[in-house]
Image 1 (spheres, rainbow, N blue to C red):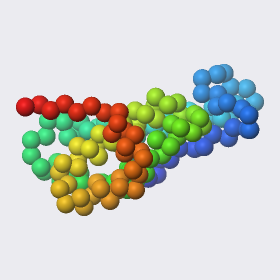
Image 2: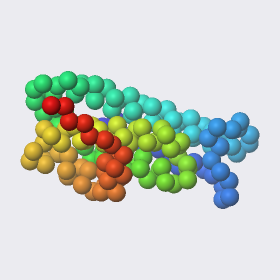
Image 3: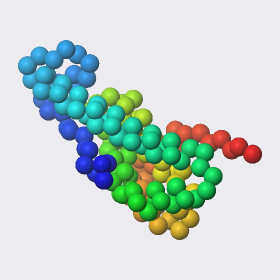
Image 4: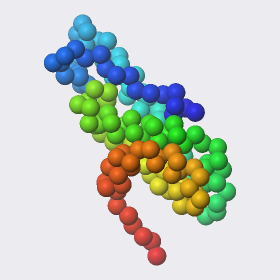
Length: 149
């Protein structure tokens, strides 16, 4: 549920202004800096949670952990967050820096991709990320595949 509750704030940038993601705050920029700080914090928290979930799956030999994850997580919320990261990357930096959005979005993608193997009936992963073809394709094109024989 954490993923559906932690959403990015749109920065209150006036027309013609750039997002002050790294500059010293003054006046209205101070408010925007607070929004940027909160978005960074949200992203770090969500990235830490997805990293922890990926760590649980690292070196998994059986189906118990992935099956439990598949049946207990709210995948629609995670897919929506992946899409939000993707959309924000091309929104002119109005939410957060590209690199942080990319890392968070990629973590969601890796989690989905790994667990898809344990969801042969497409009961969990496909319905969740099937709505976000553009985001899935974006992350898929930026990953490599290594087959260990």
